[in-house]
Image: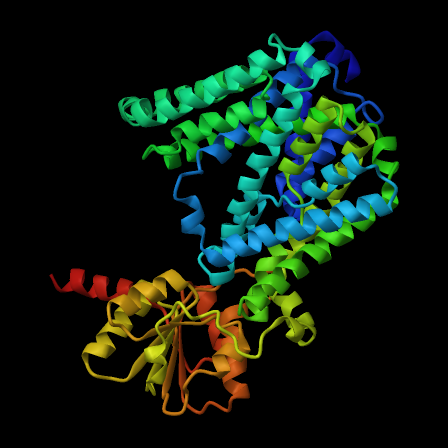
Length: 556
């Protein structure tokens, strides 16, 4: 194999891609995100293991393209109304988590013998969580639109803003660093003037050019994609040339297009290319690390990992509890920050480049990343199981008077419904509207706060509620309820059974509910599962629709 690699860089890249696909498949079987597989690949192909990486210059080029696109896609999601849109709880939780995590991480670093600068870098690196991984896991569990999912996405945006500020601060250090500046083409004074000019250019581009140019390019989607990549690489090159750093340059390129109506289309199309190119960042990272770097601070890595896995969720849980949120909402949202992200590695890599920290700190943070990303994936996947185990210990984080639902109109909570509908999708909202029109006392419950607010705005009787939260369900007015209808589908939550619908049945039995239960099945397997669970009536709308259509065709 090494002979083939020595003959051609093409053979080298081919072998690396084959190994990446293999390790990626293993990662999927272990329910791990690709970033873990890619970091493992980088270490395995590094100089102290298989030693397969020799085309360092070419891999560095692909790595820089990946970082430029990564920061470009972060920038393109930033807009001027961002702070207002994420909500008070996301802003407070995000800033609070960043502050306490970085402070505690800094103090831990000092206690473990690291100097002030290294401790500061480590503390800040521990605050960043992987938006890519969390969005993927929450989407797989269909929890993006839940209350804790929306709050988590909100404070992830806050973390992204902190990433932006942290990298700008590092870039300012780089501008003033003689060793770093010497590698570029501009003196510090010239660089500072160039930065002002660059920011002025971005402002003018956003004001006068971004919308008409993107509208013109959007007629040919492929051209819009090429222009976006060109914009990202061009701004990254300018940023690197003037000493601001290619990371900040790529970020500013994204900000320049953030106000256009095509930013989501650009982001969607570039995401796979970003993931592909980031593979080479992790390969290059592993090629620079020796296994001794990973083992140099093994005990410290385990301690920092324990802090991220346990301390970060507790920080979020405490802040959200103080703001009046249920312990369950705080716990599920808190688990999403139980890992560090690819930004943590990029942040430390910038510190190494500037000369603030040594390579062994890079090894420490890399090991923390591997441990926390791998374990937090299972923590998020099995979040409901973990909550059930720790629930009795979490009461200390919850106020006596819970106010997390203050944004929902609770006038509907005074209804004594004959029919209660869990799940207000298309079928659920149709049933809710129909029964209300007929004058039947009915109440709808859904886990999506935005959906509930929309229905309340239409004068439909709906409240927020999560069927997996037995405490919340037990507070619902079941006194006159004769029918409970469950319309939402089965979602994989990391359990071997249907968490939501089984949890609802268990709560109803605990409350000695004597009415009838109906469940909507979404497949033949679902029919069997629901019958075995104990629902009184199981309905398959797809089967009924098929039968009706067949009868209509037959009668014609």
